[in-house]
Length: 252
Image (tube, rainbow, N blue to C red; front, side):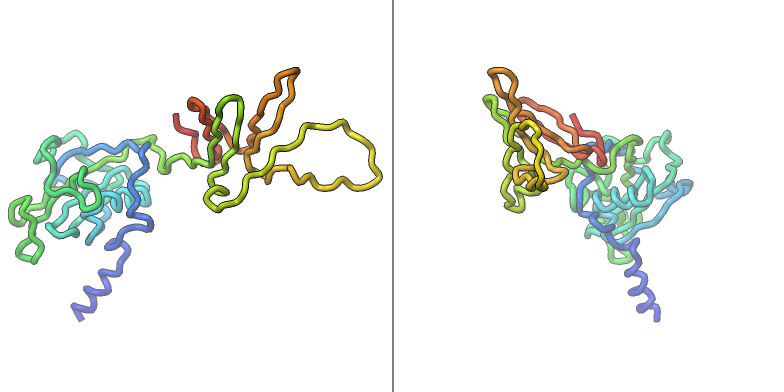
């Protein structure tokens, strides 16, 4: 019965990475390594436990913390990629000096990001050794997600290449799907009366898709890029990239 209970316990979501937990944190998120803490220094913190492979995966614990809507997470891994990890609503020791410091690392590197420390847990008597710390010792690498960081990077919709007075609209989704680009709209014509319904304009661009059109002005015609409502463009040299305003503000 005890063995069956243990197997059922391993099915708990806290023993598995979150959905999409293999993704690295977005580049615009500010993450700070607070130091290498002893297990006893975490006693006063409001902790939520995560086990197994979470303890060796920096990405998984970042997304667990984001899913729990908390700014702190801590990890202590065995030699094999499993161990003990926590997320925390409020870490009580931000002003306390970590037992093993900040600048000398903390145990073993994470299995999914060798630039990050995942602490160490040496429980050889249980069959889970880690020679990066002493027997029966746990060292927790503690991280903080700094406030004000975006949870997702900006969604890039497409870009426009500008060169020698010419413009070409590129829709990222259509290009990937192999859909041909829309033709430019013709120059406006004077309105005329007609007794029949106007034929659909086969040159009109698809709704919500950026397009370019000829703009006549004196002797020097030009090209105008038209963006539907909800999109915004940002120029960089000869390239203009447009973004969905409903996601996040376009990065610099």
